[in-house]
Image 1 (cartoon, one colour):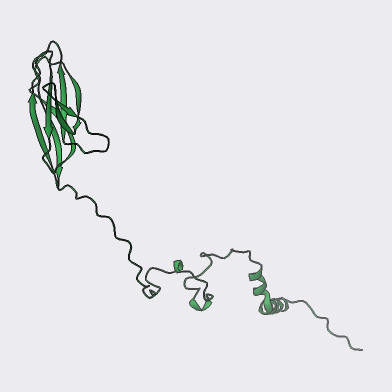
Image 2 (cartoon, one colour):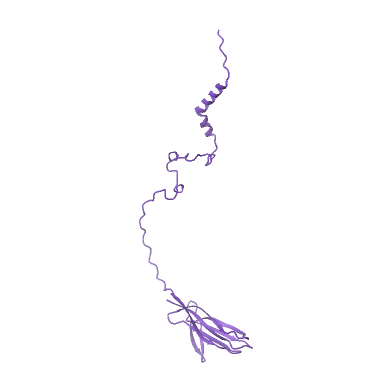
Length: 194
């Protein structure tokens, strides 16, 4: 019997076996061993993912830049809504109207009344004091809207408007304290007109 040569493990044999292993599925086995979501943008080369590699129907509209997706056809025109209710005409200008001058002397009460013209609407009001005297001690008794006037025991009385009803003017009532010079004041009313 002949002696067969004994096989020896050489560097070339090891490299050849390793190359065969990788060719037959070693790379696939390595890729399968990667964890879920372990490959990201850092691992992908530029333009590595192409349209051929993307599953059809897997992208959403948000995955595209603006203007890249074609517009769909225009939908049908909707039904016309109900007719709105016409509102009151708005004011195109607001004017200030002044009342007569009140002049209560020491220890007297004076009043001033300013009114809007017909067709105008009261939007506010107030009063102004003329030439502040050196010694003035007056008390504002009332300043507010009025709805009209009435004569009571030969005095003119201005009535306030009822809740929710329109006003026609603005009335100011001032009491001059003691000692005090005469207080000169007048009421004003802000009137809006269409």
